[in-house]
Amino acid sequence: MNKKIGYTQVVWEITRMLQEAESLEDALRASLNEVVKAVGAEAGTIWFYNAAGDQRIYPSFWIGGADLTGLSLAPGEGIAGTVVREGKPTVVKDCQNDERWAGRFDEATGFVTKSMVCVPLVNKYEVIGCIQIINKKDGSLYNDEDVSLCENLAMLTAIAVDGRGLNLGFTESKKAIISLRDVTKTFGSGENQIQVLKGVNLDIREGEFLVILGESGCGKSTMLNIIGGMDQLTTGTFLFDGTDYSRADDKMLTEYRRHSVGFIFQAYNLMPTLTAEENLEFIGELCEDSMDAGEALARVGLAQRKGNYPAQMSGGQQQRVSIARALVKKPRIILADEPTAALDYETSIEVLTVLEEVIQSGTTLLMVTHNEEIAKMANRVIRMKGGVVSEVILNRHPAKAKELVW
Image (cartoon, rainbow, N blue to C red; front, side):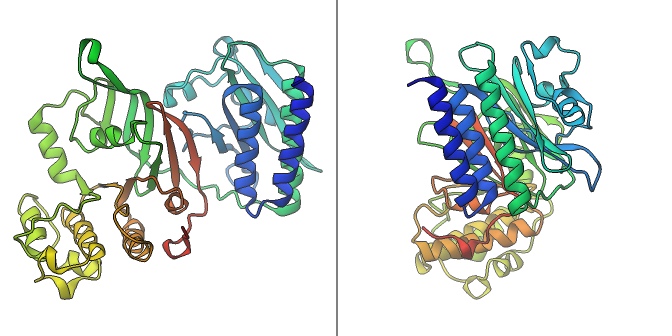
């Protein structure tokens, strides 16, 4: 297909999405993804200017493996900031040697920005942000047709924002409690060697609900095991609250699991010969400052079931006990691996409602799931593909558990 004709079809599709989509945020994210795919780029970002607040620009939608959460620029700072201040499109052939480039972004995200096209978002009165498309996968440079497609996206975006409004929800960045940089994980040796993680870069913020999506074998459970201290990385860096666990020994990892991390598993993993209360007390005895078992069960709505054994409870009740077991440790972060996979829809919503309350209390929750509907509850969604983070989605308006349908 002629490239020009192909780009025209992309513009028509973007126009349709921005006009017809129920959610403007979803349409903008999908439109950015269409442009990134059309030009063969590695990544793309839509920035918006917080004119009524701190007068900085913030990445509001992005496609690609770099996690831009918490990063911002002043107008005139970096290439994006320069485009916002001057209101003119720019094409950069070598970002690393361009004096305008804010290199700290690459340092913070582990992403290497090589080439870029950046165009302003302009409404009737002023520049409201910009669109960046970064790094062609084939190593070529951006041409006039690529720039024209990006300008069309910028124009349509500005019109859509003016016409429909967009609650950007600028907020202060929360502290990163976990940071992964260039993390790899290899199993086996010699000819049987398999590399599952191939350079993961990710920050997990304190108090957020983060969902990890991806097909089987993409590395999401392996990454969860490393974050939970149940497995060790091969190369790279893993920091928890500023402490380096990249080369931690078994004793250090045991202390980390015992005091800082709560676990929720698909199979519940409750001890069958202990009551619900005894299951929690057993874990509580291993911790220095545990929550009362009865209090933890009350928080998940099972105060009346404390004397029941797992076999005397439904699957949903057992999963709520496992949530209470995680809470009893007062962990900094809870890791949930497919916690609703074995449950029916109604029971899943029941469990997710409990987790919703856990998140609202300020606990950080990281969940691996195949269920994309659950991702609507998250503050951020990470999509993994081929052992790396392929996409980071910021969700400014998380759904309630009872709003989910599948």
